Image 1 (cartoon, protein in one colour):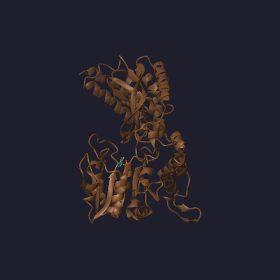
Image 2 (cartoon, protein in one colour):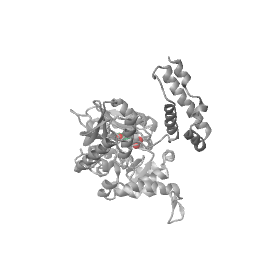
Image 3 (cartoon, helix red, strand yellow):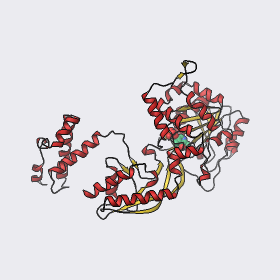
Image 4 (tube, protein in one colour):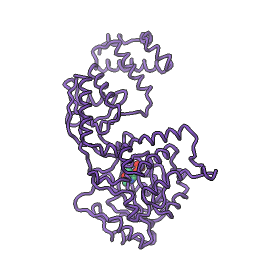
Length: 462
Ligand SMILES: *Cc1c(COP(=O)(O)O)cnc(C)c1O
């Protein structure tokens, strides 16, 4: 251990002579600045004690202080750049809202509005009225309701239609999503009793039929969003389940998870049943997320037959799951895009990124590569082909051809580059594969290229 080095550690007073530190005190207050100075001195002391450094300069302590302070001043929930190429990245906030939705959120946040006021009657209105007609029009359903998220939607529907009754579900559909949503657990909370039928890979219509009793509340179909059962498999098609349910006067509920409103198979994706399809095939109630493939805010959307929707609306627990005005505003604006499919594809970022033409991605990648190489010579940047993913537990087997900028360096390891980018003032999230850092341009937004360029420039100069 280097005692001389420990003695070289600056005192707070010494750092307080720094002009910038003084300015910080005026702007952000003495306590915050002093705490941060202490932390940066402590951090250097620790490095000395651990024998990690041989020497240091005063400027390095100040620069450490600056970066610690910046981190403290930044809101904890902050912007990051998605260079990972996963469009609906659950850890990075899932879907981005379209411009119209952002404007709508701003409008309802800054001004009073008719959230629960009927402007025609001059009397109290319902918050759900703003989107019910839109959802009916788009999906073809008789009624609609929106709650906080799809997990809440499933729970509410089961609690309303199946409390103390049995819900028959195929064993192949008892999914867990993101570790926090498990169909069996949700059913427990809703007080519906789970009756598992069939096997993991095959469930037949007779499996449902043989298990129908006087106490059956619903037949439940769950979309296996985030996994695929391949090989020797069989699932009962919705229309057969509907026929069986209706013969026995039992409603059929479908949790379709992602909630696609546009048939993406015409754009080269595998066919995912749309909400419209489920309604057309006779599902009594369908639930789905607002922030997965729909590309709106976090929400759980419930559509279906009027008699069931009315019952669900009257459930007391609906009050505890209700969505706020900002979500409602964003959802209405997003849904409006879907009145015209072309419009939706143009305006909704999630669809837009999924369907981005290959030439456009290539052009963006070439442009980014040039910009980065001009910013720093400490790295080598190359454009290569790769695959992006949809994410959000949607289309798990589907990948999209993309172009990435591959970063290597003789000076830094892949891990070091990844860490630096993640710790940058605007954190940049990338993929690391085979010793290379990959930046997928599919999910980059306007202006991100300049931030990434300055990150590499700064890193290269350190
Ligand atoms: C994602 C998903 C859920 C949970 O939806 P949230 O909106 O995240 O609550 C439920 N069921 C299925 C099938 C899903 O894919």
